[in-house]
Image 1 (cartoon, rainbow, N blue to C red):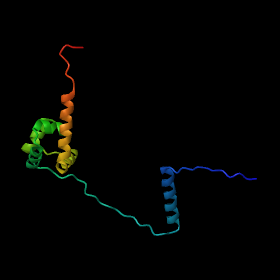
Image 2 (cartoon, rainbow, N blue to C red):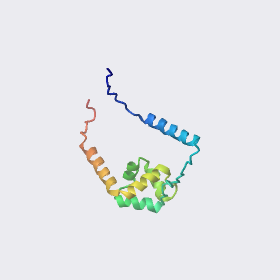
Image 3 (tube, one colour):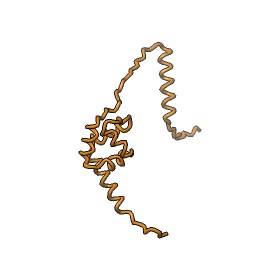
Image 4 (cartoon, rainbow, N blue to C red):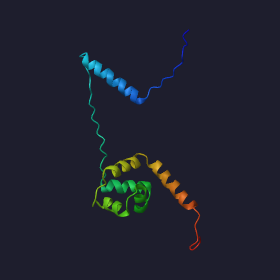
Length: 128
């Protein structure tokens, strides 16, 4: 008498990749046409002029120091950007784009940060 077994098999991502590669190899061996596509994406962040940076900071209604803190850069760097002495690069431009696209979210983040900093208990000097 044969006993039927319930065998649970799980397919991993690696198994799926290997299966796909085997199918691809077999298709090539049979001489089937293969369609390949190349997609070019322009993902370069936009550049920000000194006036753009100043306008964005003013739109948030924050000082250079607070803006620098929000961007995790020095105040001096924000000043240089606004004076045109330096240009923001790569990730800074991407962050500026995000702030420009969703200023309310960044203002809420500032407000949350401000509340958190005011809720910390202050320790007396010399207290242990």
